[in-house]
Image 1 (cartoon, helix red, strand yellow):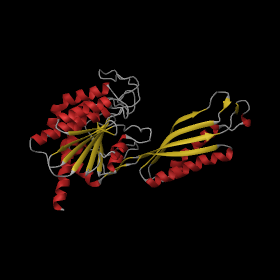
Image 2 (cartoon, rainbow, N blue to C red):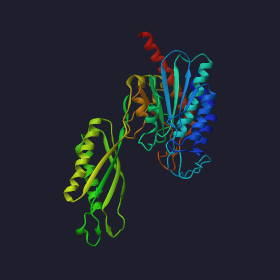
Image 3 (cartoon, helix red, strand yellow):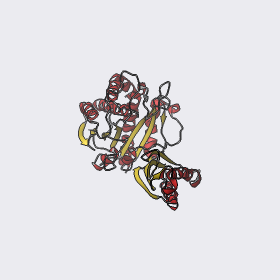
Image 4 (cartoon, rainbow, N blue to C red):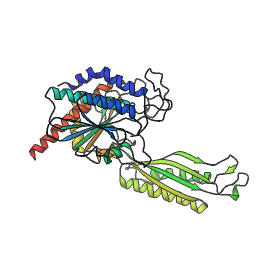
Length: 399
């Protein structure tokens, strides 16, 4: 069965769904309308649907006989960014937009449901349980510091799963090209919160106080040496501060500054080393009169693609894109909470390029992608799920 041709026939409906979701973006754990739409579509395709997983998530199963369980995941949430695109399907929600392509992912997974159902009706679907995971809140965490992926795992979405796969649309990569590699793929990420406390004074008499702004600035500058001079050049690590909050008036020496940032890593030893050195660097400010508190909030672990599942996924994709359709890139320092799913079962994740003639940036007000790639996304995921089910099933028979 030519899955790509079938996916191309679905293109008008998939684009319609993607544009509808783009007009009506919803933030993490609030994807009620998005979940309603996805649930209706996959239920119509014959899947058994369990709703309310991780608040707004969906677990949808299609059983074609006794066999392994292969899960395919898409995230649904948008970002708190005000869209500035002038397209007809631009966000109708002020201050919220799909600036990372999760509308594309959701529509693509709806396409997977249609393709798998078509194979089943044609008697061409290998025996297995095919599970679709529509996941909330990849972009952020709830009040307990848990992302949608964490919540999905806690609420049983990965129970019995033998392999899990997913993709991310790449607005920065050539349309129709695939980046897939075994091993480290996305970095792990921790949040860093540093509080520097000084003593307030009049700006005209700084010697009477302890300047939290000046000391925090020293700490930030010194911290930039941690990776460049403290970590082996052969290792991968990034430390970035993105927020600085402090002070109450221009003519008052600030008594408190709070810095917020992230550290990113592939190797847990590098993670530990950056944490230790960062604590030491800011601790040194105490000799200058500051009180310092350095805290780390564990974020997402690295996404590490399983060797076998990645190889099987590449085998499935090659007929769709050709060998020239694969990109040779380095692992990305972005983080992805697909990592939590891939810790529960062998997993593989890929980038699918969908750049417009003038490529857009992720997490940006003018983000957009080439919708012509959407059917390919559905075909890649459906064909991969089927091929992995066949491989796993063959392995069980030999055992």
